[in-house]
Length: 244
Ligand SMILES: C[S@@+](CC[C@H](N)C(=O)[O-])C[C@H]1O[C@@H](n2cnc3c(N)ncnc32)[C@H](O)[C@@H]1O
Image (cartoon, rainbow, N blue to C red; front, side):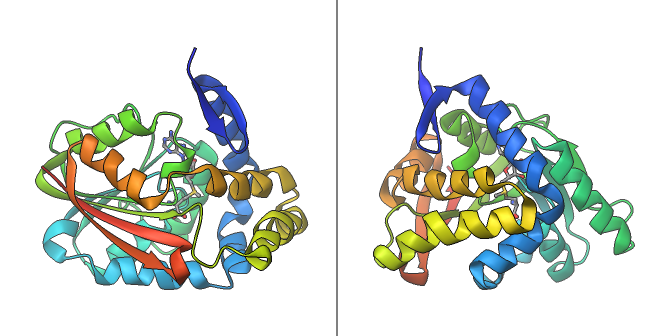
């Protein structure tokens, strides 16, 4: 039986789905606040850079995969009026927080909110001009199958933009290590009451693929001409690819 990493543990795929589901169900209402606190707002700069690289032509029909509470979807709608955006995520709790945020902003019909697993997307072939995935890849129980799903739902030439942490940034030193493995779980405990969720975050970052291996995965799934941009001495990376 093939196992997959859930943080530092090896678990069965079905168990990873359930464990990841429990992590995000447990932090959903405080997820956005925690992102700001633990990164001191840095994630916003990375997301802004991603948005600057996005074109209206690519964005007009976008799937925000593992879109959670809709951070990227709201940015896309703000920047590209008229773009059709759908958020798909496996966590009903994260989607519910996003849906409420949308209503607070007066957004009733858009974006759309769909509960779905990345490995089995409920969309027709070639239905999107772009798929965006911010900090989702690490959490997938079936990365290869999910990337092939991304390719399937993209139009030929369609764009895939993914933001993800890298396991061994250049700035890997004892300070970053202590911050990730001690401060972040402590803060997570104080803000969400779920220390385990933020220990999982730290461990899952450390266990994730290095950028070169991640780029190769994209190529294997038919998402080629990968461009890689590194942020903050390689703490996070933006992968930009097109359906070949
Ligand atoms: C770190 S959050 C990122 C949320 C959002 N993209 C953002 O940028 O804030 C990871 C998201 O991936 C979702 N997720 C994890 N595994 C998934 C899967 N197999 N299929 C779809 N979504 C998944 C989680 O429910 C969670 O909302």
